[in-house]
Image (tube, rainbow, N blue to C red; front, side, top):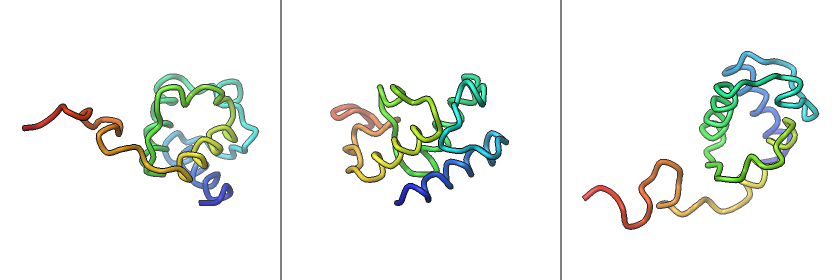
Length: 98
């Protein structure tokens, strides 16, 4: 997926889920948008759902602007998916059901 399409999808998540319009790649998530913890969580979950990716521990490092989010999504979308047993919410290998 190209960067412009990712940015458009991120803008749609902001508009539809957080009612925030007009974000650019230079928009600072905390300073400009003043996202509280619930809004931040909503953003992460909705981006994961929209783009069908899973963010991992440490992915938040260096994320300050919308452009950083776009870059992280671009990396996630271009790489291989995580192993089935390691996806968020899935039981770890050797754990689970029956």
